[in-house]
Length: 369
Image (cartoon, rainbow, N blue to C red; front, side):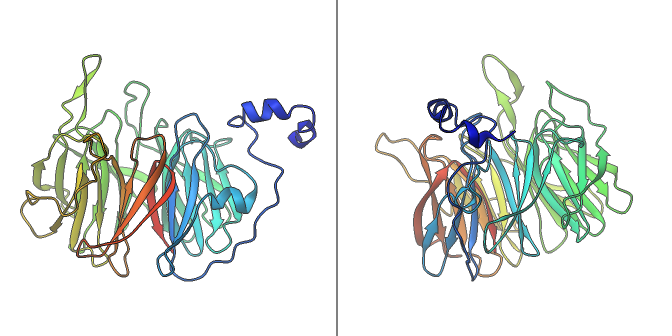
């Protein structure tokens, strides 16, 4: 169906319902040709608002371009941007509530391919992991499957049953890290499991059970240790599931045994972990940003970077975190109040603020070109 023919007669309706099904606009596409080592910043937007956006930041010039996906392709990115990764010249963007994974050229931001829910077992894609040049995995918020596609052609290959029972409608899998032929993925919503996938057989071969609920973020260090942070679940007057106390775990990826665990402060925003380029230093968001060596026995008491305080004395909501693998610059996303344009802070590896700039609503994911 060609929606463009409706523009002259139904312009008012299109303006009122711009978050609807029609993602293709009628504007001239901009031509980009970026070079150097830039940073892709995915802005989640607001749920059901269709206002997810993509920003691009040049750390040399300190210039930021916002809304580059829309400007380069004259179409909206979609509803609820979840994650972005870069592999072999392509940025893969999972847009959860739109049920789509985009592939765009990292220099022009032009769409190269897309994977949609039709004909797949994908419902709400969360994260993409490139297993090799011919195979990629996609985790999901609701589907009890990890979907498989070809990252070059975007051809759908199949799905891996997670065999996780649905809890309140969720059978989620989340972030993925690889150790040898095994991919670990955390089951976030209403779960305390980490699944182990054999990438040669494309099947779940093992699982790890945590003492805390809802593992939210994972990374694997240089010594083969899997670091996991949970958000502790939810505890409210209406619905009790967990106690909202986050935990940090250190797990041996070979034996799959938990070696360390530590309770953290109750999180008011979003928990997240990241590693530096050498994968020997761990950073995490737990209201503020903390730093520790991967050989330390516990997290330090004092934060490495403190979140800003607004005029009313409220702490800003830190929402995303990543570290440049080349120079270990630290990028922290600040959702502010979840409704206005978010802020990104760039720090040196020593915690010195280098830059601060505005992006889209709810910045949550970084990937380095």
